[in-house]
Structure formats: structure tokens, C-alpha cells
Image 1 (cartoon, rainbow, N blue to C red):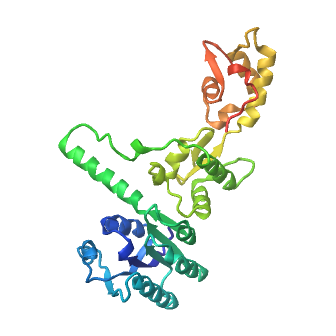
Image 2: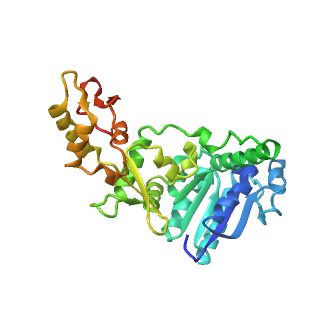
Length: 326
């Protein structure tokens, strides 16, 4: 985030948002700017909002009373939208945070973005796709709650035992499969700044993912950070610059596999095995594998799909020599 913090208007649909995660939500909002206005809308005469009443003073939320004039009609939505437009025309704010799982706020999010302001949405995973896509970024409340619950359990475990807590976000990490795998590889490819080096800045990768999928969040898949998620992928190499910024690039197995095929054709025995040290010399003459972070040729071979190693020799499994890594 830049030195100038964004001034954000936080508008909460109390009828459609649970109060249980407000602490985590406000902490997330603080990462992106200052909550200069915080209003929450609902019928405060209803017992349904008791949980919210306990949080008003704690988070300095200004309650806006809106009676349900007609059963089945959501007057709260209308009042929130009217106030949002007033705030928009005041030219005071840099962005809006809309807390709701209701698709009725889709036009509002779109209108705010048309005015050049950023929109952060917060809602349940059941939130309609239209509202999520209308926001610049959309955060799932469940993700924020899970991270906080994990932290609390870790603290309790540490306080009562010398054993480290076994439950944290890593225990729920999902296996990265298509189409998610393809999306991440595409994000890396589209974020390359220098075609010759192939390196992509982590910040650019993150921006690409958010721009294409506003609700993208590594926490949805059990990963605390995008970098942790990418490190679970195969075929990626990572490095840091002098300012400790992370970069990654795809290892060009498409170049390596044909070279291994040629080497095997020249040096394999009758059973299809080739001596690793002999093939290494051949590969070194055509392809610098150490440039991609492999200090040992055996480690390189182990990273290639469909290769089996036995003692000092290797071969492709089931004669699938034309297979290549993702």
C-alpha cells in the first residue's frame, strides 16, 4: 500500500451480515486504508440484531435505523444505497467497503467503480457471483474467521502445553488441481516483465489473479499466502531481489525433455537405462540446469514426470518419453 492511506466508507447490511466476524473484517479493512465512515443499517427494534448491538461501541459503528415498512420488502437496502450515493457525491472517499451477501448491491458496486473508486466486498461463500464480480476485491467472511480461530487455538495450545499446536491453516491445504493449477500458471506467464529471463514479480501475479477473479484468496484453499500456494506447484523456481521482493518463473521442461530423449537414444542400454553421469555431461553441453536452481543433476531428474531412477541410471517409465511437465 502507498504512503497515502485510502479513505474508506464502510457500509454494513446488518440484516444480511453476521456480527460474529466483525473484528476480523475491520482488521482486514485496516490493511487497505482507514475506515473514515462506518455505518450499519437495520431495524434495531428487531431482536435479530442483538449480536450487532453488542459491537456498535466496540467498533465505533454508527447505527442507522430503518423500519421494515412492508413485510417482504428490504427497506434497509434502499437506505444504504441512498446514503452510499450521498457519500460518493461528497468526493471525500477513495473507496467503499460493502458488507453483505446480498446481490441487490451489485448495481451499487458497479456505480461506485464507474466513478473511479475502489470497492471491497465482504460476504459469505454463498454470495451470488454477480455481486462478487462487481467488486474490485471480494473477501469471504469464512476465511477471515478460520484464520482467527486457528490463531486463538494456537495461543491456547501454547499456554497449556509445551507441544506445538498441530492445527493451523497449513493442515487444511488443498491439493492444487485444474482448473486452479492452470489459472496459477497463466497468472505467472501473464506477469512476466522480461521475456528473456522469464521472471514474474509476485505482486504482479497477485494483481492479475485479483483482476480476473475478485474473490480469489489463497485462504480459500488453506494457504496463508499466495507465495505458499505457488511453492506447492511443480515446475516453478523462486528468487528475491535486493529489496527482498519475491519473483518466480516456470522451469522450461519443454526444452529439457527433448534433450533427455536424445540423450537416452544415444546412451541407453538394451533395457532402456542410461547412466546418469553420462547424460549429465550431454545435458550440460546444451542446457544449464543450475540456472534454474538445481545444484544436483539427480534433483533435476527427480523433478521430471515419468522418470524412474535406479542406482546410477535412469529411464522414462512405460516408454512415455514424450511426456512433459506442466
